[in-house]
Image 1 (cartoon, rainbow, N blue to C red):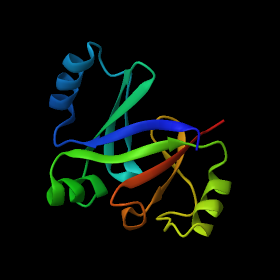
Image 2 (cartoon, rainbow, N blue to C red):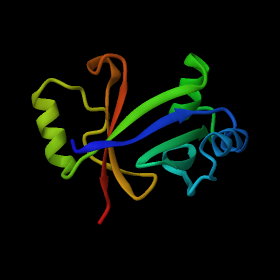
Image 3 (cartoon, helix red, strand yellow):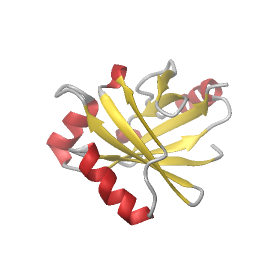
Length: 133
């Protein structure tokens, strides 16, 4: 893992939350997109070299809707940039981590993504991200 790629925050209302984070960072989101396969709309903000991803559920069965129902709004995941996501999956499985989706899938912000189960990462949902080239 090379660096923290972004921190994901689950929100109930993306438009309202965008205004909050625009005020916080003094700049608007640089990108918004929907990932229909995950039932989520996202906004990305830059803060220096760091990225924040806001996530709003687009349907009541999405992982974000379930997260908010259970835990409320807040930090949902931390994402790490990796050079070779398939090698990282093999390495981490060998280390005993539970991988939620062993086959990388297309995520937001032009990334391939894989998630590690929080029960093996001290309660934190970890996302691995690789730039799609």
